[in-house]
Each structure stands twice: as C-alpha cells, then as structure tokens.
Length: 118
Image 1 (cartoon, rainbow, N blue to C red):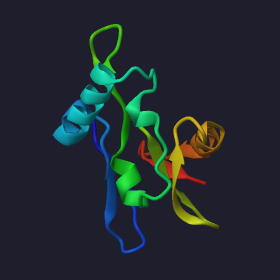
Image 2: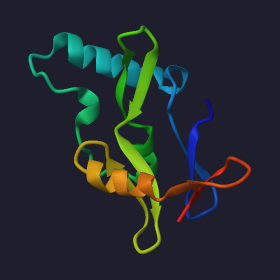
Image 3: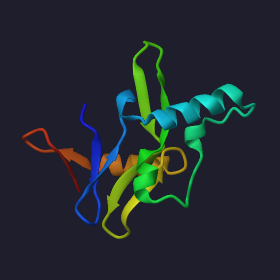
Image 4: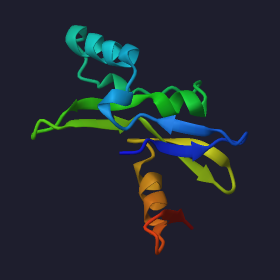
C-alpha cells in the first residue's frame, strides 16, 4: 500500500503513516505508555494539537492496533486535504468527520484507475 501523499506549497509531499511499519517507534512507545499507565479511557491519538503544523499533524496516528482478524490497522489522527479556498489543512478524524466525508465524496477515479478530485 502506498503512503498517502499531499502536496505542500513548496512542492514537497506530506507523507502520512498508513501502515504499522510507517508509524514512528517514538509514537508507538508514547501510545503504549499512555494506554498502559493512564486511568483515562482516551486514546492518545485522539488528542487535538492545534499548535502543530500541518506536517506534524500528518504524522500523528490515532489508531495503530490489530483488528478482530489480527490484521494491523493504522488510522491517522488528521487527514490532510487541499482546500482551494483555505489551502492545505489538516482535518481531525473525529471532530471534522463530516467534512472528511464531503471530501471523500468528491473523489473520482479516471479511466486509468487513478484517483482525481473535483
């Protein structure tokens, strides 16, 4: 599976971790520490960080765990999208779920099987 990429203003790509291998060891350790030693039921990846840059938000993972079948699942905390009016922005997977759904509805696949956006 290819890593999800989005163009930054300077032409570089923002890479988001989408597989367990792409999640940094530091983030895995931080998640494990919070989940094992916290009395709060909050997933550490669900915490919003408005002060972070789009690039930093793109690296934050909400879920990195096995599903019921044992397959590893990775869900980014933020989904980076290109907005024609606002430029590039990071949408939080919980708080901005409706806007993420709207963006996904705009996706189209061309004859070559490549995803294009309206």
